[in-house]
Length: 134
Image (tube, rainbow, N blue to C red; front, side, top):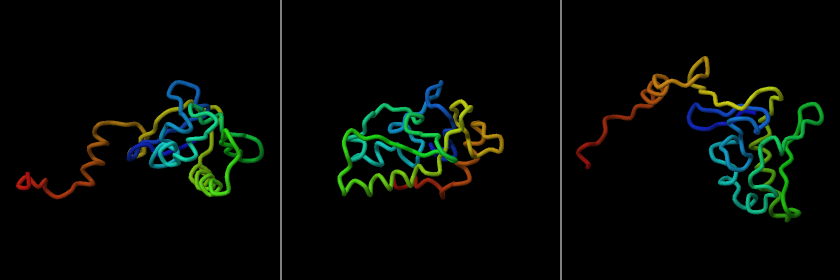
């Protein structure tokens, strides 16, 4: 499973139960925000708000599928929200024997360093800070 965290940081993992575990709704692994913030109406009736990512992954078939569960049947107007959710997470897959960890995508070895963060921030440098406006 891969997901965006901050800038170049990603979560990668398998079970969501090992050290560094990943919560389906509450951790930022499926986009720019945690899914509970991106889909508050779905989160409101999620069957398990504390579920691990692995609990909603079904490895059946060739590629596996996501199977988020809800505490009640969907209303017609909620089906589109579930479709949006599935579109966001459809490209993420669990890697069965890989322990959960964070990767820093701004370096070739995917290991975070202060220098790599500085270089990333410096590359986005904005013109001089407007001291006169303070």
